[in-house]
Image (cartoon, rainbow, N blue to C red):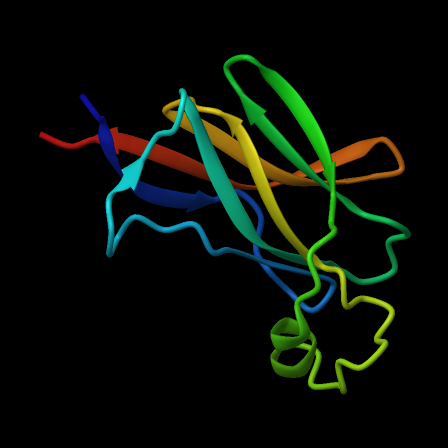
Length: 126
């Protein structure tokens, strides 16, 4: 039996010109389905003036850190309004697979410090 979940988000920090992000994972249109007790999260993160920012993910099992390693020319063109070709912040996207929890917190890690950005709340359907 497959469990399906809907997702709601609650921002913890306001997005501004220094720190911008988006979580592409959304079950508002299609219910999320878990695979082997894990959920895939995707999105992008732009942090002005941060060297090598990383994605931080916290759930009931622990806190995880992932590099931003997905090229997002759409983000560079739309958000930064700059040509995406060889842009230094082109790899601002992420796609990670983490153990499922009904509450997952997403943040930015830089120089050992984490700024928590948003909470993802998953609600079981039916």
